[in-house]
Amino acid sequence: MSWKPQASLEVLRLRASLLARIRNFFEARGVLEVETPVLGHAGVTDPFIESLRSGELYLQTSPELAMKRLLAAGSGPIFQICKAFRAGEAGTRHNPEFTMLEWYQPGYDHHALMDEVDLLLQEVLETESAERETFGALFLSHVGLDPHTADRNALERAARAVGEAPFAASGLEVDDWLNLLMARVIEPQLGQDRPFFVYDYPVCLKALARLRDETPPVAERFELYYRGMELANGYHELTDLREQRARFEDDRKRREALGLAAVHEDGLFLDALEAGLPKSAGVALGFDRLVMIAASATSIRDVLSFPLDTP
Amino acid sequence: MASSYGINQLRTGLKILVDNAPCVIIDLDLVKPGKGQAFTRVKFRNLKTGRMLEKTVKSGESIEGADVLETEMQYLYSDGEFWHYMDPNSYEQYQADAAAVGDASKWLKEEVQCSVTLYNNVIIQVTPPMFVELEVVETEPGIRGDTAGTGGKTAKLETGTVVRVPLFVQLGEKLKLDTRTGEYVGRVKD
Image (cartoon, rainbow over all chains, first blue to last red; front, side, top):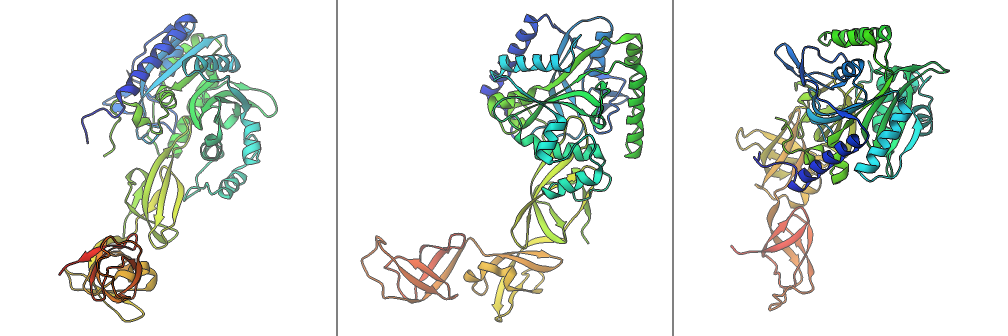
C-alpha cells in the first residue's frame, strides 16, 4: 500500500472547484450553509443502512434529521456539505466515509426541487436540462411490469428472465426486487446523455417521502441518475408526526425480523416534528459521484484523496 | 469439507461452489441503492470450463467454499487415457483425464513440473510451464546460413505437436517454446 494519494492532484483541484461552484450556486439563491454534528446519540433506523459507532455514540449516516430540526426552528432554505459514514459500504461507487451535499427548500414540492437540482447540475457540471419520468412508466417500459401492483413472484420471474436473481432469492420482499431490478436492469441505461429524474415511487419505497393519495397511491420521492449512476435521492418531505412514528415502528420491526441490533429513534427529531416541520422538499446528493462524473472516473476511489482500504 | 463464506468475507481469488461447480472469484462490487437491500455482484470463472459468469448475492447470504488447491506436480507419463502426475512432496500419484489436461497435453514431456488445480483431491486443470524445451523429431532439412529466420517451415516436436519454426532449425535440435502462444522462442544449446 502506498502513502501517496489515490486521486490525482488534478482531480483534487477539480473537487475543490466543484465545491466552490456549489457554494456559489447556493449563495446566489439565498440558501444558508449550515453544519450539524457528525457525531450524535441517535443512529439510523433504516434496516438497510448500518451506522458506524464510537462507544455509545453514532457517526451520522446522513444529516437529514438534524437539518429538519433546523427547518422546524425556522431556518428557511439550508444546505450542507458534510461527511457521512455507512458501515460496510465499499465498492466502485461506495466508500464507508463519503461526502454528501444535502439541501432543503421550505415551500417546495418534489417537482420544484427537481427543477433546482437540474439547475445546479447545469451550472456545476454544464449538463443539458434533465429528463423526467415516473417510476411506474419507467418500470413498465424496461421490465414490463407495473411496480405499484406487481407481486413478489412476478418480480422474481422478471429478474430471473434477465439473469438477475440472487443465489438464494428467499426472503426478498417486493421492495427488494424493485430495488434489484432498478439497480441492475434500469439504472445502467439511465441518463446516458443528460441527467434523468425518476419520481413518484411505489408506496413500499416511500422512505421518508410524503404519500399522495391517488389510485394507486404514490410516494412523492425522486432519484437522479446520470451516466448510468444514481446521484441523488429526494423527497417532498413527510411532516406528519403520527405517520413518522409509524415508519420508525416499521423500521424497528424489520430490523428485528432481519436479526439486526435495535436502534433508538431520534426523539429530538420527533419533538421537532411535533413542534411543526414546514412543508418542504429535500435532497441528498453524493458529492463524490458528482466528481466521478466530472472527472470521468470509473471508481469512487479515484476521486478520494485517501479511500478506506479494505483488508 | 470446505467452509462457507459470508458476503463480507468474499475476496477475489477465493474458490467457491456455484451450482456444484468449483469457481474462482474474479471481481466483486457492491450494488446498494441509497435506500434498500444491499447486494454484491460476484463475477467468477468456472474452473472446469473457464466460463465467466456473474451473480448477485444479497447480504446475509452465505456461499459455499470449494475445496480447491493449486499446487505444483511432476508429470510422469500418459497411458493413452489418463495423464499421470506425482506430488513431489508426498510422492502421491494423481491421474488427470483429457478434459482436465486440455491443451496442456501438447507440451507435456515426462518429468516436467506443471501447476495443477485439485478439486476434492481430483485434478481438474493442468497448466504447463510458461516455457518448455522440446526436441524436433521431424522437419525438412535446415537451410544453413538463413539465420535471419525469414520465411519458415513446420517442425514436429517429441510430444507430437507441430509448430512453425525458422528455416535454419535442424532435426534433433532442442527448441524453447512459449506454451501460451504456441510460438517458437529460440534454440537451446546443450
